[in-house]
Length: 447
Image (cartoon, rainbow, N blue to C red; front, side):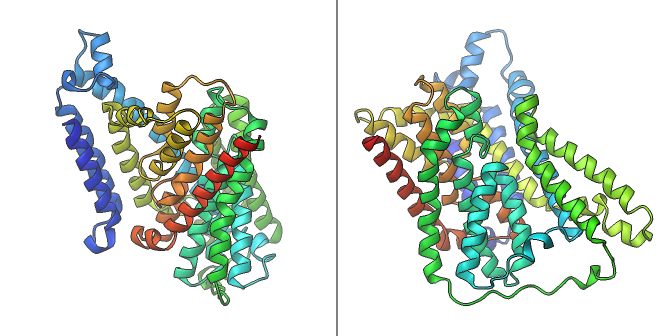
């Protein structure tokens, strides 16, 4: 069953990639993949698993325990808790963004972006995403930027190109900030990196990983974009300027407060997002209380929750559940051990391992990959391996659209096709990723 699970995982990814030819929604494929992976795991003989499997290690340490009991009540519940944190964060952030958009808040930004030239707009959007991701995180940034793109670009295919660059920019921006990406947060909290040092060492490689694809793409982007027509269905709702501004600054302020909330309280980010959403909910209910029922209904948080892209959230659930099965069974540990066996001398060995980890993070969730590395190696704080791991795990996920939280969010919101991204964006993202790797290694050799 150990190797059957690997084959099923590959087949499930193929179904997701071929969503449009198969005419099967990727969320359905991902959910089925997650269920099958855990079912196969439950049917396997735990004592036949490799020695490094967490399941076998647990049973050997607790000989009287039931494998199925441990599987359902410990392993699965543990992973489901971690996954639920991401899903609730996604739900809260998407609702806040929808609420800002519905109140016309993004007009504060879009009214100041005058250019319609594709190349110029591409640079503006990418640079905003890069720095915003460092302050927020790549997932929240991608959600906000897609909402902005819908206000700036009418043509769907043009928006897909810009959305691809938002993914690259958000992941690159998240890598050099201690709060910009979940794996960087893991390394920071795990005392593997320090905040100032990761900014100093990773900023330039991260910037290069964005500037290289951005420069290449800007040479091919000709002409102008057309702005979308105003939504006539909401023209009859007269919002005062202070109301629009209040919702915008409150919404963005609560999103920016999330990393501060986490740092102060050490509570998970989804609680900060849900807290911000609840306050916005109360504010909008009071603000719109005197409006006609039809208008207040259109502006309510309840209406925003109905607009949330639920299939994207279920897709995220299925993918993360499937990867959790491989993490628990031991396939990811097998991968880590295989990488560690590369017959090269330090530092070339660890440079190569990290580059491969970054590429693999576009296929497998980067969290278990980084967690595996943190468990295997005991390098001191701010060692080049941890710095390079932060860069690779953060930016490597851009290579495939399902390789990062930002990519999955943009894919769901804009319905970007996996194969289209593979043809149009993957090579650009890979070129930028490898260029950034080269800059990091060169910096280590010179410094």
